[in-house]
Length: 201
Image 1 (cartoon, rainbow, N blue to C red):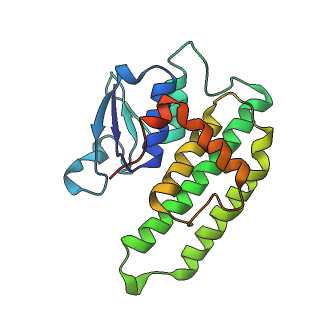
Image 2: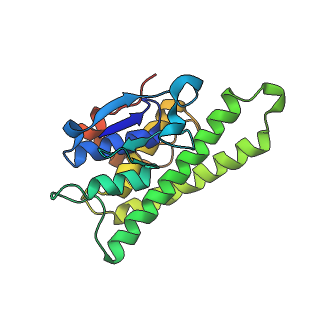
């Protein structure tokens, strides 16, 4: 298998972390890909021209990160990141969706502030994204006390999300006023999947 990824993509980081957590990282060739470069030829593997894209041994490609992560989780017999059924499965999918939504908003801010010409930037759009991130982080702060100590797909996605907020600074200091979330995030850094996938330029 091959994983087309970028060191700066939090969605690709989710998949990379999942590979490590599932013990599959040795089975996948990592292919650095700049999705913004015309020569990347990414559309052959993902018509959306986005990373991550996982190319299977039969040549089929999977995207996006929730699909890839659940597929990888199906390939091993150890600790599962996606609960098979019941309320915990829906809880984990909901946490994943919320964290992915924060990422969507943070990436939208990044595009608006750095890629769009200054005279065409929409401050109201940026404010809307920041408000969505703030509300969602406040929800995580309240919800985290109910989380299991088991590292599942929801918390894994939250790690990738908070790491991206640190990396790009979309909303300043997200830790301010969120001591429980900040403490929890600090405790995750003893995991190999977190240490080895830290975003970098």
